[in-house]
Amino acid sequence: MSESRRLPRERQQPVTVDVDGMPVACFAGETIATVLLADGVTAFATRGGEPRQPLCNMGTCFDCSVVVDGIPLTRACLTPVADGMSIRTGQGD
Image (cartoon, rainbow, N blue to C red; front, top):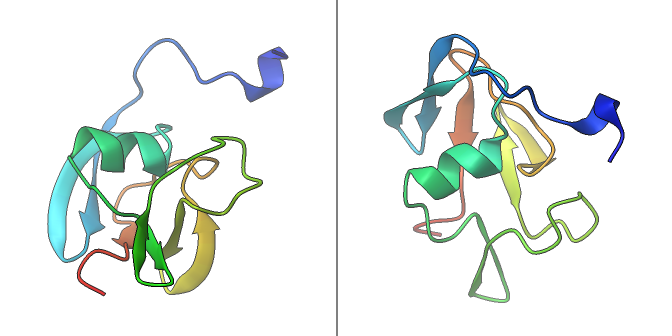
C-alpha cells in the first residue's frame, strides 16, 4: 500500500465526536468506521430494512454510509474524524 493511504502509527490528539446524540471519545485521524466499530455500533445504515456495516473498507460498496455534519452518504471507511463532528448512523431507523 502506498504511504499516502496509510494511517499514522502514532495516535493523534484525543477528540470527541457526536454519534447519534452521544459523545464518543476517539483520536483525530481515525476513520469514522474505526470509531463506530470500536464503540460497538452494529448498523451504520440500512438498506431495504436490513442493517449494513462496512464490507469493502475502500469506499466502493457504500455499506458504511453515514450522515456527517448533515451531509448524507459519507463513507465512514474513508473519512477521518475531527473534533466536534456530528455522525448519524442508521441505527434506530
